[in-house]
Amino acid sequence: MKVTRIACSTRLNPGKYAALLEQARRLGRVRSEVWQRYGSINGVGSGLRDRQVRDWWLVDGTHQRFGVLANAWKETVRDAIADMTANMAAAKVDVRRAIVRRTDDPAERKRMLTALKSDRWAGDPFLARQMRKHWKRGKNRTHDQIVVRADQHHTFADGRGRLWLAVPGLERRRMVRIPLSTTVAPTGTLRLILRGGRVEVHYQIDASQLRSSQRPCGGRMIGVDKGYTEALTDSEGEQHGVRLGKLLAAESDRVKERNRRRAKLRSVANNAARRGDHAKAHRITVDNLGSVKRNRRAARHRAQVRTEIFTAVHRVVDKAATVVAEDLTKTFTGRKTLGRNVNRRLAAWTKGVTAEALTNVSERRGSVLVHVNAAYTSQACHRCGSLGRRSGDRLHCTSCGVVWQADVNAAINILQRAGDPDIALHTPHHTVKQILQDRTDRHRTRLPVQDSSPTNLGRRAKHPNRSTTNH
Ligand SMILES: [Zn+2]
Image 1: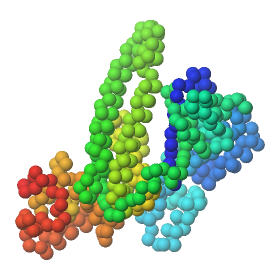
Image 2: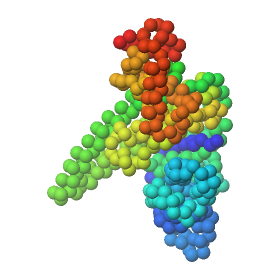
Image 3: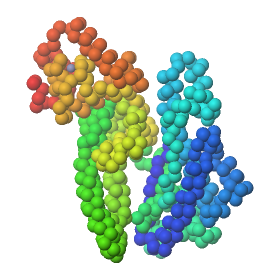
Image 4: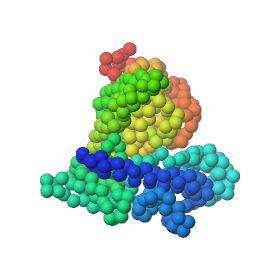
């Protein structure tokens, strides 16, 4: 398994940065061309390979329009095709679900799944319709990246022990030398991302080289619930990543305040421009409305949140051989529907990071990740199954008469879903509710009236919220 590492440039001289930026801009046009020409059914939809595109372009001379070196545009074509394929693969996940819903016939299912997988779906009316529905044709938005093939770059140390990375520029045999803030040389294919006067060098290393991958996992089976104040709560009552809420709240406040300030400044600049005071308008735009500081701040915040979440997952895996969790990638919403709402954007993003951390850490440390259906896990009482009343971080079960800590209760429910004979991963929401209700009814008719004597509070009641247990 691969993990991404990022090295950053230190003070880079503006001339070099401008040259790299120009190269990235030209390569952005290469990307746009690839998306435009091959981003549909006739392109990646029919299993197109980057090698074919390269051969066509070499024949018809398309590549000469961009003014970049051969290796640069070829790597960019490969990268863009990979992006488009990933975009299509995401749609195929939804279409696979639609196939399962459509037919019970195993032969028919298999036929459709095979056609989908081998990109022969365009000929089947149902598959074509489903793909059109789920596969949003995208366009290129990347104009600040340069992909450098493994054999096209090298690193060297200067007299003061500082590490430099040399990458191809726009002219043959004229390398651009970038000073790095790290002592570890990036290896393999590099992705240079140009942001705010700095170069981020993204590269992948084998996860087995990481120290954290050598740490063994635990031996138990543990359910986890994803939270907003803390990254995870586990079924044993422990919370992990408790700083997450503070980090997100602070960022959200800061972004909102900054947006307010910027909106005000922008209107001042617009007014100045209307009056004809273009010097002032320009000054405000350049001095106060730039993106350099904003982007740096955002990058730092992203790094802090990732660390908090990954550390939380490592803590869980310290104890667990099997981690049971909701499939957090499933309900992931695209960026469009989220609009400008800061909190929702942050929440959706942290959800994605948590999903990534669970998969990544489990795989590296050898624990098993089990995805379960999480419908009603935050509302149902884990002991009797009836739907309780939630208030703040408490869940009050009226039929047991117990108040649970809501997140711990949810984590226990999630753990129990792993062995649930009736509720499978894709059981619809309303069916889950019906199953839970049937169970509570059975529970009620079979058992005598519950009281709250200590024996009845019993074995599983390990985590009642102490201050309010006997309400
Ligand atoms: Zn209950």
